Image 1: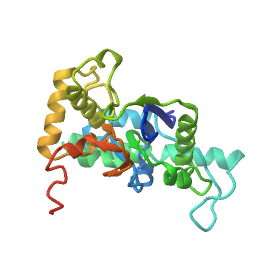
Image 2 (image 1 turned 45 degrees about the horizontal axis):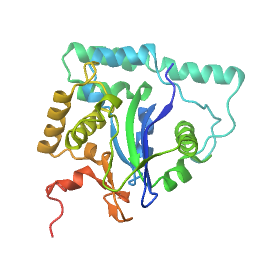
Image 3 (image 1 turned 180 degrees about the horizontal axis):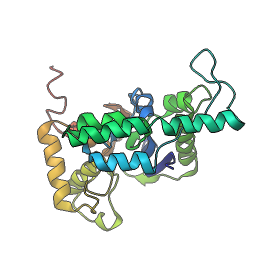
Image 4 (image 1 turned 135 degrees about the horizontal axis):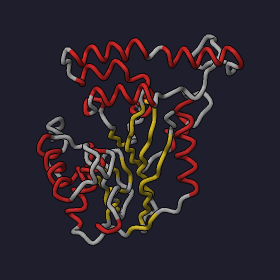
Length: 274
């Protein structure tokens, strides 16, 4: 079965301001994404169900379905009661797993009539995991609300992991003007910084070092992806790449770190006029 997991991809600290920035990759159930998206201090990109072939999505649901970490007793309010035990717990888990069979069958029928996966795959999202890349300088509110007994149990698991990773990891010290570059491999450190910014942005868009076909990405493909992001106005992956500054001024949702997207005049998409 799939397990919730947090991986700290890159943790950096500005030498001058001592302001830290962290990038995580989370593996979480799809249904808790709204809990993460509500935190506007976090820059995030996630793997899309629209990109997964229907057959592969069905295989994931049947072979490695997500199972909630907690089955609590029903009571009024948003939080469940004491955990179910014994026979009731056994039945609850079977209800969760058995309930996927009819949606999976209907998903199969939809594929046969050539229904596109951007609609089709939504039918079975309750049982799948997704990967999310998160970057932020401000984590206090997230941990206050999500590493909390009142939060959805599944997000408590990943929030606790993230908090422990930050507390037990020593950040990389960067000088003013140097860049926080998630997903840059050690052998790529000597590349031109402008190129590394593009590579990092492309990999943040994919939430991976790998291309969508499973092959390890190469520089040319990453450059093309970043250029397409800029041309089409998909700016969010460029937020994870950030430059250490000498002050604690705000840049987008970051403090003390300038987002790469802010280097482009049209990064607001035309929503703001001065």
